[in-house]
Image (cartoon, rainbow, N blue to C red):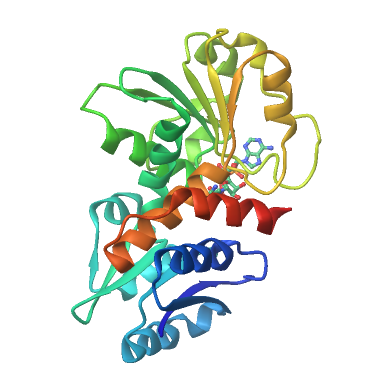
Length: 265
Ligand code: NDP
C-alpha cells in the first residue's frame, strides 16, 4: 500500500484525507492518506523522511506552504510564481513542489459554469490564497483576456501586485463579472462583511474561498439574486489535481465532493 500525507499545524480540521481516501477507493488505487501535525521546526526532517519512504505524495497546508518550497528540488511554474507549495510529488526521486490551489480554483469555477475568459474579476484580499487565485486566472486565460483587480485593506503593504484601496470598492465593483472574496472575513463568525454588494451588476457572480460554513457574504449575495460559488469547489479542485499528479489518473471529482460534504456535515 502507498502512503500519502497531508501536513499542517494544526491538521485535525483537514478534510483532505476524507476526499483523497474516497478517491483512492473509487479508483481502485491501493493507497491511504493520513494527516500529520508537523511543527515548523520539524519540517526539514519530515521532508527528508518523505524522500526516504518514497511516499506517493503530500498535501501541504498552513503554516508550511511557503517554507516547504525551499526544501523541494524543483517547483512548477505556479509554485514559482506564487511562492507557495500546497502539493508535493516524488518524481524519479526528485521532490517537485506544485501549487494546485491556483488551477484548482479555476477548475472549480469552470465546472460551475463560469468561464473567466474575457471577464472582469475583482479579488478581495492580498494573502496567499488571493495570490493563488490571481495566478490561476492569469494562467488560464490568454494575456489581457481576463482583467483582475485586487482590492486590499492595506494596499501599500502588498508587494506582489498593485492593489486598489478598500474605499474604492463601490467603483471597482460596478463593472465586475465576478467578485472573489479571498479574505478571511467570513472564517469564524457572521459579523457584517461590509462589502457593498449593491454596487455589483445583476449578472455578477460572488465567490468565497471559505468552504466549511455558509458565509454572510454568500447569503446576502444570494438574497440579491446574484449567482454564488463557495470554497468547496477550490478544495476539491486542488485535491483532484494532486490525485492526478500522484496517480496519473483522472480524479473522481464527484466522489471527492460527496466525501467532502459528508466530512463537513
Ligand atoms: P491570509 O491570512 O494569507 O490572507 C488573508 C487576507 O484577508 C489578507 O489580505 C488580510 O488582510 C485580509 N483580511 C482579513 N480580514 C480582513 C478584513 N476584516 N477586511 C479586509 N481584509 C481582511 O490567508 P489565506 O490567503 O491563506 O486564506 C484566505 C482565505 O482563503 C481563508 O479563509 C482560507 O480558509 C481560504 N482558503 C481556502 C482554500 C480552498 O481550497 N477553498 C485554499 C486556501 C485558502 P491583512 O493582510 O490586512 O490582514
